Length: 218
Image (cartoon, rainbow, N blue to C red):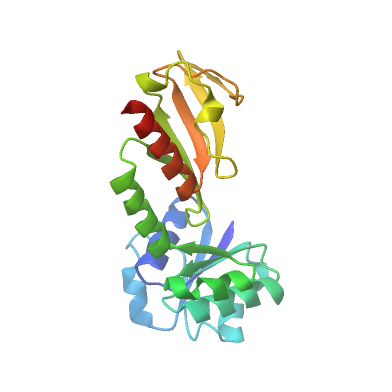
């Protein structure tokens, strides 16, 4: 894969190196030559110094042949513009932008871009760890608006039906493992203590599940 990473701060440098280690052709753009010092010494991709919004700089970086582009500068407006140009002018198939300030996310999302907000995701993840300690997140989609959680069915819920546990519209059962065998659970399935249950849920949905478990256990 031919990838362009725009911005060589800590995020950009780490991303570029990880992609390089996996065998991708990586080009990093930054307006300051000193930014490339953030790259690992054994990074052997290309670097292009120059104004990241300059068409000639983008051309030298190979944007016309790029398969993917990640805009990860610390400017949300620049990331949005670069990503929009990459998609609409150069028709780069896969474009992802970093969100630095959460209040700017609506601007980036208005362009229909794939947005990764480390601030929003990190805050929500810490909140989950503080409030839902008995559940473990195994997959996060988007910026953690929907996640897949794993937990063991407690003794107090033995014999209860799955549908009693799940709030409608906010939570779906993804899988259930019992005695080492996984199944796609139906809503009328009777739970057994020790079942490993996987739920896809919003934060509000998983908090509702937690409250239901706590009430049943008390």
